[in-house]
Image 1 (cartoon, rainbow, N blue to C red):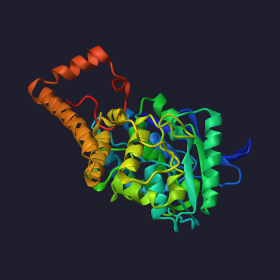
Image 2 (image 1 turned 45 degrees about the vertical axis):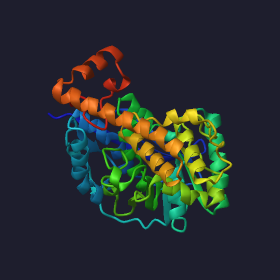
Image 3 (image 1 turned 30 degrees about the horizontal axis):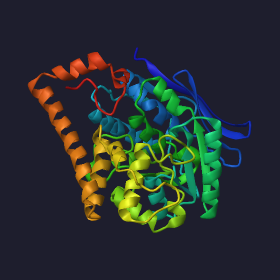
Image 4 (image 1 turned 60 degrees about the horizontal axis):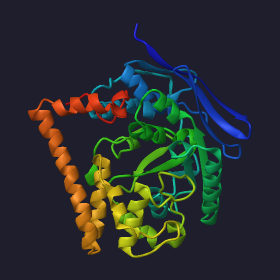
Length: 388
């Protein structure tokens, strides 16, 4: 008999000042919590998003008990899995056992996932008239202490109210659940965001794009897969992949209220440190565009450009965009430095190909043995970690 990964005991309760949607997912308690003044909807789709990669890597039937799944989404799940399996061939396409429902709820709210970073601020500005609610997920914050989270919520609540929007802070242990099972957050985050719409009672949700249409490669949030998580009641939109990061920054800088609210830091949840890679790349963009802002310190130390060195394909896209902005700004010094880092990355990729096809991945195996990098232990990554 084929084993099952069971999602059961899906329930919606109010307790301790929160509305909480929870379920038992493969024996573990997984929850989504919002303040009691925001109404959640009883929904199974968000737990399917949480559990799908685990079911695929362990090749188990995914069974949903008690609450029906959107018929539209259920019909798309095989194709969604086919996309993920193309990215990582170690995944299996599994059966989804669930009752389905095609009823449409006529929700009034339109949400956008919002971290106050460049991508989410640009999407907010671009769709300002349509968006009514800004969704802030605690799962994606770098820090996890309660005091920092409270400061972040307080700051962004005031900002949202100042522009006539409502902030919806969402607390969940879903990311911890996935990390505990060695599922890469680079992959998992897209499923978590895309599947949350029904639970949040939104008629439309924007997921701000991290990469442009000409930078498409396997990534958790993707213009191919995100919209496929739509249901009869909630449309999922992968938003603004047609704009480069430099273009996004230029647009944001025309709106000082939004620019002064930017929160891009990896090291802090309620301020910008000015030293981490995300801070530095944003400071460089501000410097090249020539419009200072209050949310970040000015870029003055050229030695910090080394923070923009690329270590993977995603990082290379940010480096390329900074190079383009430097060239457009006619800043030869920054352009030459970034070009050197970009060339180093491309050479490293060439070495990987030479090792794979001419050396039988000898150096890759030696690297794994000597360094024992953390990614070796991940069960689900964006690509099959054993390929090559």
